[in-house]
Amino acid sequence: MNTTRRNLLLTATGLAATAASLKGRSAHAADQMADFLFVQTADGMRYDKAANRLTLEGVSGSTLFFSDRPERIAGNMKTAAFIPFWSKGGDSFLSDPPNADLSILEGDELKQVVVVLENPELNDNNLTYTVKVVGGEMPETGSEASVFIDIIGMPLTPLSYAGVARRGYRRAVLH
Image (cartoon, rainbow, N blue to C red; front, side):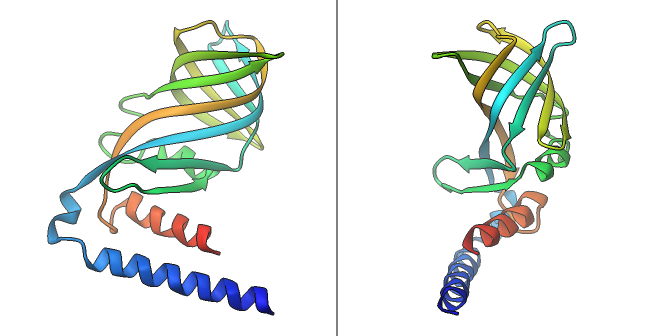
């Protein structure tokens, strides 16, 4: 019972703070943008060089996102929600594929590869991308993979797709 009350108080406090911050925004908030970076982690990876396909095996159910100053927004979204988000908006990853830094453990050695990501497909807990390697040497397999995905500009207005999604993600974090 105490845990439920504590969660209710934390949620109410968080929602009040979010409402207060949104109320304080200028009328031009709809015109403001923020650059968001994304991070995905997985238990392992596999690369099919002939097909240029990278598969993140055992990918986390959450994709992290954050922005830089002045907004400093951070949160997470379900990885399953990230896939349709890929093609939302005029300046989407679909229209301008992002660069990404892929960090992989191959045995005891850390490998870093810079790639361009395209065509994400989520099947159960495996996330596959078509990739173009632009820096480094991609191993065929590896463990403990992290993908740091380049920025995408998103509107800050709470009525935008990203704004609505961020409110939902913030609430999810507060629970």
